[in-house]
Image 1: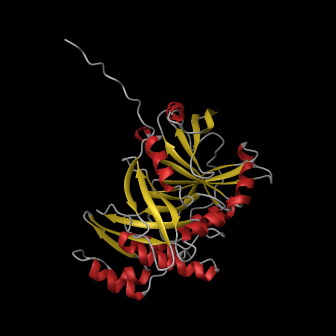
Image 2 (image 1 turned 180 degrees about the horizontal axis):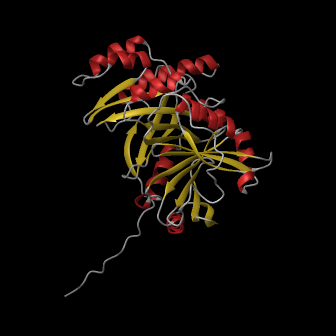
Image 3 (image 1 turned 180 degrees about the vertical axis):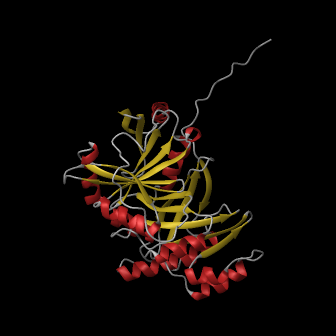
Length: 374
């Protein structure tokens, strides 16, 4: 009797991700950006690295809220890699970092599938153990960082301290819980290439796709595909599509001088409370016309919603087969019109606010027009 040999398939990178570890911002002034993220968005500084802790070439602040961790980093010399990156791109997200059990094995697996390893696996030791990291290249100069923390029992990592940190932010708690998704922008004509890379090289799956006809106004359009690992790591990728005028994606690519992270979606269990707190702290959001809510009330039925609060705060609402979601978008949070933040509350819905696309992009175009970039 013949026996069929079992062929073991190596686990994909996507299947080995434990979730988001952190997002690292590379900025020109880490102290100022940290102060703004704490005062405006309610984050708390939980660790610091710099010359005072033995790190000579940069300063980094670790910010925490719910399960979200930001690392805000600035270079201390004009010719440092951080400073050169910021000179070219402005403030933005450099590392999309994932928690893994074995950084070396994950990086090796990614390389075997064709990923470019830009930082070989390396362990940094400290009094509380060690942290191992490795990095691969993705779109533009963005990097995916694999972080292994099983051997570390300290505050954040070697070189970081929890002493003499900035005070806790004043103001009402915001209530950010987690990272819902992180969106990247790539050049026109390269969306399908990057989606294939995430699927074939890293083992992600395609969640949904939006054509230019679905995401357009009378002036501009874009295409978007959402990839995910099935366990909480969700990443839409956008490219500009031909239109009568310059799209928001092309404005980003021109301003950032290449592909990069366009926005971070932060999940909250109560968006009315969160946005109210952020507004009181000085965060500015895109405005919706009053006619939006007239249409939304006809489009979204069967749910008890705080319509007066939603309209007063400019919060958008959408519905799909699973339920509804509430979302809102800040103005760009960097000097260049590049990075912005979304706040989202999901009540069963798994979509991305498809019913809001037209109103949202018209609001973005109004901001583009104010800058003279439409």
